[in-house]
Amino acid sequence: MNEITVYIGLGSNLQNPVGQIKQAILALSKLPQTTLVKTSSLYTSDSLLAGQPRYTNAIVSISSQLAAETLLDLLQQIEHNQGRQRTQHWGARTLDLDIILYGNQQINTPRLTVPHSQMEQRSFVLIPLAEIAPDLILPNGRTITSLLAHCPSLNLRKLTESATTLLEPN
Image (cartoon, rainbow, N blue to C red; front, side, top):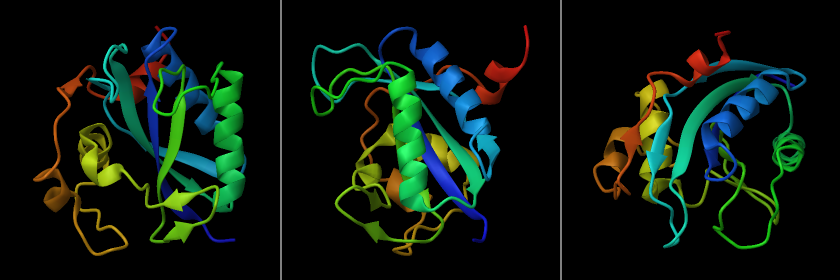
């Protein structure tokens, strides 16, 4: 299988969210048949549900030979290893890993929808994605810049310049 550029969204709002993101990026860098290419800055945003802690988010790009659903299985294993419990839709979580884009493919299976079905309404996806791939054109022909113009901010704030600095030894 050829190498495919994949963009993965990371989010956490429980049990040391920055540490959860750091651990997840490290796990992503160790996936088989996969190379970690680039990481965005870390951002913090309001939760989609009232009363929850703020989220820490980032986007990473990887180059992978893994099939989309195989990658999904591995992402869900990373989530599980970091204590993810699926109890409430959009509920608080230790870690959420979403395949945002899988090359230029459009995937719609019972388990996976790519491009991610909600990405166009989520600044915590679009802003870090635009940071690492400013010229990206989605499979539907739209640009990241055009999507950002119509996206609510959810009080998004940048925390760090690059999430890769989290991987460097202290």
